[in-house]
Amino acid sequence: MQIRSWLRPKYLPVLVVGVVVFVLAMAGTALAGELPELAVPTIASDLLDYPPGATVTLTGTDWQGDTTVHIRVSDWEGTWSYDSDVAVGDDGTVTDALQLPLWVIANYAVTATGVETGRVATSAFTDKPAAPTGLTPNGVYVSSTGPLLNWDDTTGANTYEVVVSIQPNFSSQLIDNSTLTASQYQVSSGTLANGTLYYWRVRANGPGPSGPTGWSNWTEASFTVDTAAPTVTINTFTSPTRDSTPTFAGTGGNATNDSATVTVKIYSGSNTSGTLLQTLSATRSGTSYSVDASPALAEGTYTAQAEQSDSAGNT
Image 1: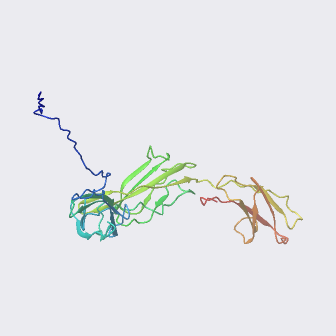
Image 2 (image 1 turned 60 degrees about the vertical axis):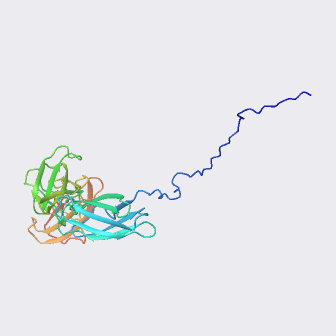
Image 3 (image 1 turned 45 degrees about the horizontal axis):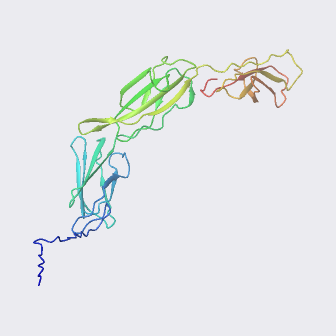
């Protein structure tokens, strides 16, 4: 009998299958045991510029993750500061209000820090003097070569600068005075030229705890110098005349700022020192005008005088 022997190999191949289970989380989704990704918080004032002593309202957003935010407001000179701890609302917002000092400081820095997360948000605002208002003359004709420039007092300001130029961009200056302490400037007579358009501007500076704080924005205006009255003529009459309602006619000025009305005044006697009897108004057409005496004149001697004014006040 034949006996067959089957030998088992010492090693047999074994198939091993590895299985990995994982969860894919999208960006911004917190994993178990991991804090959620926090947004970048903000802090801002309700205005960019305030007058001295004004109330500033600060508002912040995206402070989720903190229950309290510490707010610090300080001036650029280190002479004044404000600190406050503000609770975070359910929607992640914070709100706080503070009053500025009564003097001008110009620049303030705001720093908000999350007490729990340490996140920081910053912003800034100013309380420089407001730009001056109420500038006169502006957009008109003036009859003087040395007009008075006026503007309203500016809250918080103790110094003003005035610039006068014939250039609208002020690339050259005829006048530049930055040491004014009153809200006006008297241009010296004869400084300006007749028939010329001038541009002028003014800005304000204020007193800070340790000196001037910085200039406000400029406010600009313009005017034209016109020192000459309109040229007006009146017709002559053959004397004596039988016309008791004579027609007075002539020419008047036709410049942009010349009045459209020519006034004829009739005086008793042979000159204008007599009694004023009639004042007649004639609307000119181009340079021409005419008007009849009304009511009729009695027999006698009369003097007629024509006048015309312009917007600068010249007659």
